Image 1: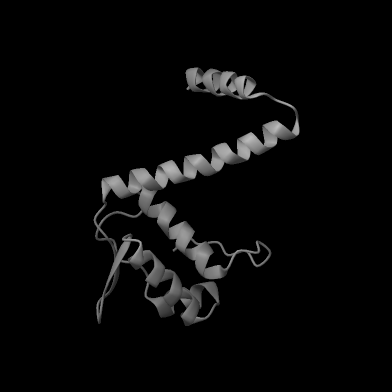
Image 2: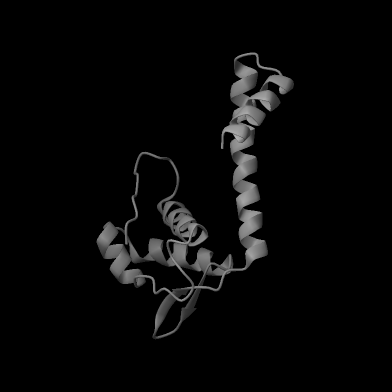
Length: 124
């Protein structure tokens, strides 16, 4: 499993694991029913505590991205399209908030930002 952990990010390791696995599910890289590495295996690969991987998996399960079956492992849950759409909307809002902060820092107006977004959207 290709997960990159950054000790300098300031973000807890379990959050980094959760976010990367969540992104893989949302993008379709991990599909419904795909088996995830066991908590022990992932901890060993990443050279971290099993407690950390356990917390990441528990949060993913609570959020509906994976299911865990005792004695069998953890698997990607069936996609709830409403939930995935909501997650995408949340991510878009985060990016737009950053764009607003950056634009305010260099004196762009709301109209400037809307025009820039419109031009970028048309190019796509």
